[in-house]
Length: 149
Image (cartoon, rainbow, N blue to C red; front, top):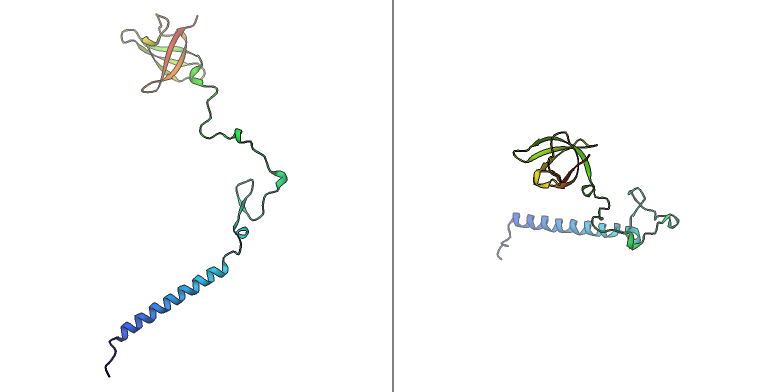
């Protein structure tokens, strides 16, 4: 009779493979035994502070929300600051180049202004002016500049 073509190392590898497979099946069975029996066991609730808890919230403390009150996206801006007239003082104005800067009353911010956006002629340094603020290429810009008397 001839000898088997299996070597000792081949048999050892097969034994290790079978042992790993058996251990894997045992672990799978243990997980199946430990898993929750029903869907209710898997549910977690969140309290009013955002912490997970096992107890459901009290229905008496429930707050009803109307579907119309839910705003998806950015709510419309009611009071746009950019649309209101602002006041300030002209701190610098170059008549040759046609531009200058206005210091906003209250905030102290400096706003760029150009002669093309002036409603009144003769705006000079030190004048109190009213204007609307808009976005420019490099920052805020004063438009519709009018001298206050």
